[in-house]
Length: 117
Image 1 (tube, rainbow, N blue to C red):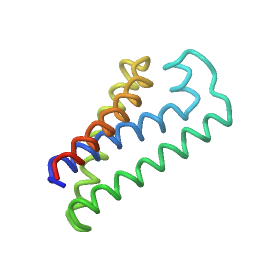
Image 2 (tube, rainbow, N blue to C red; image 1 turned 135 degrees about the vertical axis):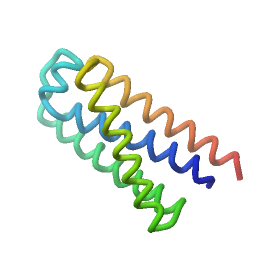
Image 3 (spheres, helix red, strand yellow; image 1 turned 90 degrees about the horizontal axis):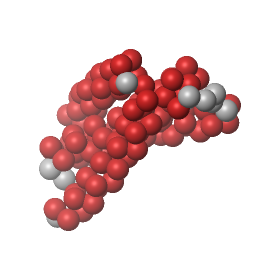
Image 4 (tube, rainbow, N blue to C red; image 1 turned 180 degrees about the vertical axis):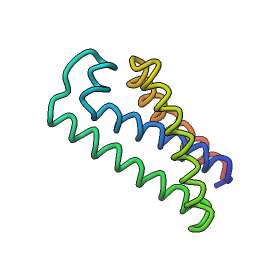
């Protein structure tokens, strides 16, 4: 897979992961959706968020090798983290949409990557 495509895919997955992790916190969930977070749903959001972070690391390492892949993953974590923090701070009602957009972008990039070969 092309390095640029790997980075975009990792960034989309990490945005979705950080959005889910933010939504797993009661305060952010309350501000984003206007309702309390059930305990079970909070755990599911945390597990999904951490799982997506692992997937993003695997994408970077698989596409770019261990050395460059880990550095690229850290870059994706930084960029996505900044975006999610800004969204959580200034427009918390967009947080759920951001998670869906990240997942949709990751799916679209995977489809595009499968056609590039």
